[in-house]
Amino acid sequence: MEPVRAREVIVALTGGVRKHTEKYHRPGDGYRSEFEEFMHGFLARHPEVQEDRRRGWDIWWDHRVDLDELDKQRESELPLKPYVYD
Image 1 (cartoon, one colour):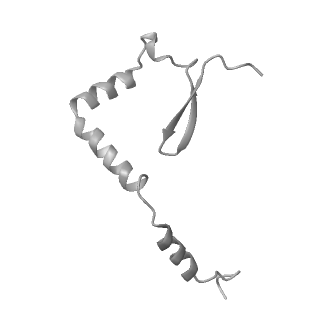
Image 2 (cartoon, rainbow, N blue to C red; image 1 turned 30 degrees about the vertical axis):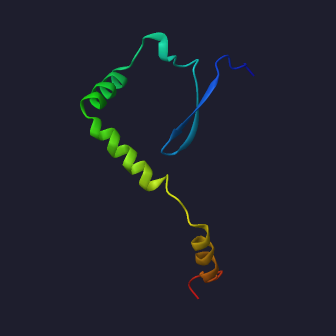
Image 3 (tube, one colour; image 1 turned 90 degrees about the vertical axis):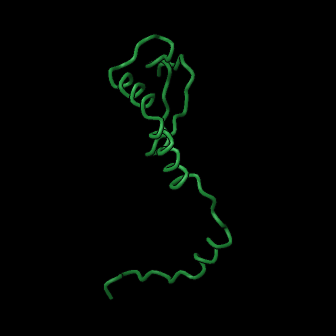
């Protein structure tokens, strides 16, 4: 197995956590793909998109969970039948 020469950076994505190594893309190497150029320009022209993304992230991912309420819900659940069509 080849040793990884670059340090690994964990990047949080909407689908989970992905490891990205700098050996494939170095931020300081001066290269940007057409898509990166487009997104950089688009987000510079439309800062409301970043605000909307942050608001959506807060709604779906960064919310507080009331553990007491969660325990009450689990206790009040009915057990599932092994075969639901009976």
